[in-house]
Length: 493
Image 1 (spheres, rainbow, N blue to C red):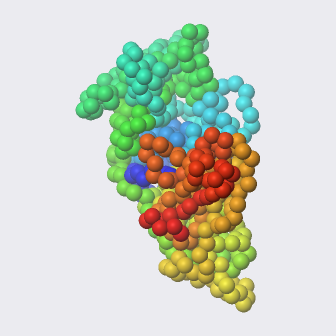
Image 2 (image 1 turned 180 degrees about the horizontal axis):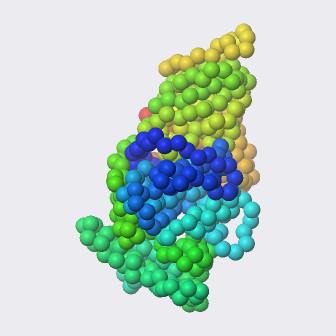
Image 3 (image 1 turned 60 degrees about the horizontal axis):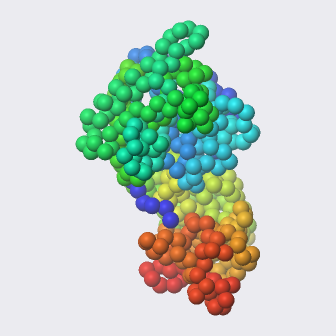
């Protein structure tokens, strides 16, 4: 299940966007002509990359903010998102709110490889490699880098316990060295001194001393370092290739989301001040993401607006294209036609053969749905298309998305999934027009996902058919047949 949380609100700006496809940075207008430049790379793919360059009224240094390089750390990418709309009096920002958009939508640390371990050395050619190529070019344009993360536990220079010690990351400002001296220019960069100064200033605004930030020097280049794997990271690349101060900013994963975003903002503001970057406007407030409507075209016809929770009735075999998402957010939105297409089906023409629904997400948080039903009577091409507030058009449907041995399939209600004993599988989700799946409980009878808090909800867990199933709940009493039950308000649907 996906936890509910609040997100930063958007700001609207009337600036045009420069649209780029590929991995070569777009040429831009002179800074004096345009104070905000939005570049899009790999548009229309699941790994679309949005880059925002904000130029101040007066020239100055440039600070690069990277959020979401690992998709299961929302504090970082939601904080960076606020700075994409900021206005500056002096200096410049380059903001990449969602470096690894595909992993954010799927709420995973990585998809193919850890994107933050691909900045040095040889690596496989995949979408992460393409994104890192862009990020490395942005590093070359910058005077400093902040890579925003959420980390486990609380960092402490001394061992205080299993959750607070030198090997934890939360509430720390991490660098790969204390002092960097450029071997070619002999210029010295006081990496640690700047971090300690920012931490001291930030901690003045944090009432709880257990949440104070501390500088963590990973001494990444040294042979005795415990963090040699970070020689492939963005910060290591920035300091040892381009000689600029670079930091990993880590808030504690267990803190409330709004608090993590606030702490990231405090640290970003502290570094902006050290770089002489002065803002004109602050970040936004927090509010729940809500879908207002989708703009949808059927068979390349004139587009229509379908509001959240409405049902769009079409004919079997119609091509559906979602051209626009209108919500109370501007960025981080995807539309997923369940059982069709890919992670993000926005601006793609997709043939629909059966009833389903379109889920709209803000990052990985579902914020609305529209339902696709099939017309029972088809007289001619285009006939039978309608929009209704009634979900139970035609017949009700329910199906299951099951992933086994790395492959995902959709199974109709009352069908069977045949597995080998010892095989692992996952209940991804259900697809239905009877209710929003987030209002349902999907329970595998005979499996307990969380013994300390057994809610009956079993979606999203990797289930081992050899070890995890309780024989006494089997339908055949022999431990061979088990049943998945879907309920709403304790009533089976």
